[in-house]
Length: 207
Ligand SMILES: Cc1ncc(COP(=O)(O)OP(=O)(O)O)c(N)n1
Ligand SMILES: Cc1ncsc1CCOP(=O)(O)O
Ligand SMILES: [Mg+2]
Image 1 (cartoon, rainbow, N blue to C red):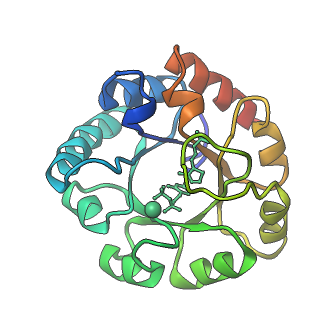
Image 2: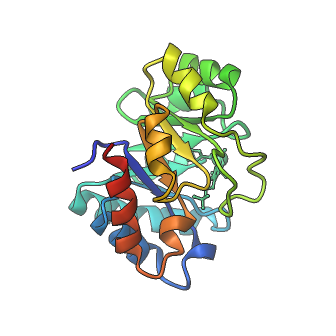
């Protein structure tokens, strides 16, 4: 089995080929996903909470972690394991204060300065990306490549989760550069066979 933070799958209605969020998450866990991140930019707060409750039940039954994207309030409301915030979301130190120390705080970083600030704010892991060109986030910016991961890894032990354009073909390179794990949308959510796609990624993580 992969370590806890090794393999994040982010939900995305738009890329799911009409399949339900629960079905996508369940098959992703079948294939080896260790974290499901509830990411639904279009949902109302009420819908997010319904999705979060359903995913909470699934992830508990199946031994996966549940992280909520962007929304500390929703993470607390559905008793998620944690929250992921980016540079335009609630500042990391405030998120940490609201979450307490028993839940996981992930913070995005796209530079060494952002990484240091996130670590100081109390991040349990950093989301580093986009590593490669991505279809999953329209405003993700230019690909960073692997250098930032390697540079942060030389200085800090904080777990690093690589995101953006990760596939079974490049996942091994990402891990060798010093990542602790990966996060994906399209490579799993958009796959015809979700559990097979997840299994192929999970396999590439064992380096
Ligand atoms: C694991 C992980 N890393 C990075 C992100 C991106 O967060 P953010 O920059 O806030 O962008 P959105 O996902 O909110 O569009 C993430 N979600 N997860
Ligand atoms: C949410 C996010 N943050 C940086 S890239 C990205 C999207 C990742 O999607 P994909 O795995 O399909 O490239
Ligand atoms: Mg965000």
